[in-house]
Length: 297
Image 1: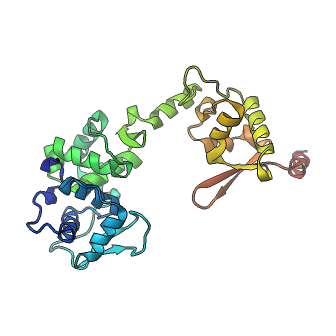
Image 2 (image 1 turned 90 degrees about the vertical axis):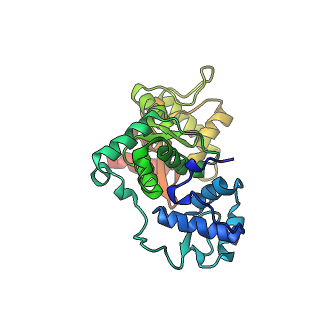
Image 3 (image 1 turned 180 degrees about the vertical axis):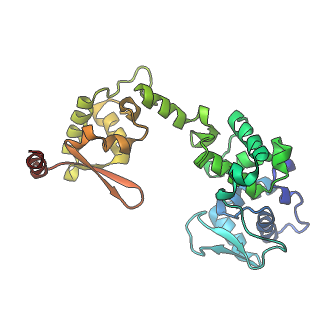
């Protein structure tokens, strides 16, 4: 069961006709009224609140395609990577709220301070799907604050995104949103400042020095084709092949790619970036090391 107070303001009364296509169209219209872009995950979350069923991306796309006056953009996207588009927006529709409209300058100090206070304190329920994390927090904010309840759901959602991505009020823990002070990002920042490991149990051995790090990388890359490895696999290889944990915060970094691009590592290795935010760590060849030594001389 769900509480109607958890729904966006425009979604309080379901339509009398209960065919899936009609409900989906009505949900899309409600999000338009609430200035919230009807992305696939948002529709999935809202419909789960309305009918108690979590639709798959195929079911949701099927209902949208069967509904009159609604389409998906792009039409052939994978999974929930689409938005629903109405052929005729509701009367008075002026557009969706963007994150640029969520700062204190655009909202006003009173509304922004209210949102900041609630996001700093926390207390919202856990999202059962990480792709719904922003919607759960936005819904909770409207349930908790009369000031934020008077704003559109799209505007409150933009406040949550701004709070997480720009204002530093929110962070992540196990893939879900939490107040920044409770987040993994905050933990990594503190550990990086103090040289402590992150996500390493008290009884686990971890890499502590630059010599240990370079020696471990050397051993691992010599076993890899082309003497290279994807950065995303490095920690797992240290664990499975060397029996030690690798934590970037020990070396003052908050992410692994920054650590592997450090000057202490560049002496023997090169970090290469590829499209799609992919990184590859490669051991320098004898010729490259020789050329580098000659250049330094």
